Image (tube, rainbow, N blue to C red; front, top):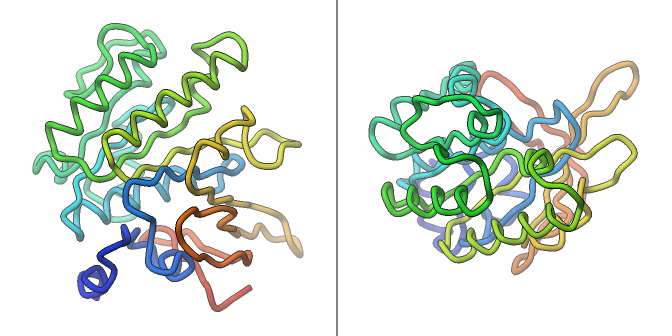
Length: 248
């Protein structure tokens, strides 16, 4: 079913996430950089992993996950909870996980794709570029750019780093996702610049309603395409995220 839909949407990058493509009128614009932002536990990493897994498994679009905070083996283990075998895709060179978390923490790594000369934005950019060429990546996810804050002093330096990463993602022409965690009391982003450098912004929420936690999302911005501006509920089930466009 999904492969037939892809043929009808040649000008879109189909996420493969049920309900989300409907809201986006077919998917993301190829080559755009999308910010996925929300509080802790809203499902940002799951959305990124699902986007990459679907691309590699179903749509012949290899992908790269850049982990700035979570160790690769933790990501692989969590993915198995949804039936996503990332190691299989890695063996087939359809997926690469760049371990930036170990370098940032000053720890050794045995990962094939990693930062081994210390953590800085130039090294990270070079590794993303090299890995993109090696596996022919079409999709990239950086999780999370909030992790850059530990490496730079001052908001200006952090913003500069984010701009440089965004410029690289545009240059390599991959459709990319960047996650950013919203601190308590903030509305959209941590550093006040992420939503302006991205071509799209998806907000994820986890809020209490009638003594229950409810997940919702809003597509706040998506340049170059029409999209729904409504707030939609979504669930995280055994096969990942499912958005329910029919329920508002």
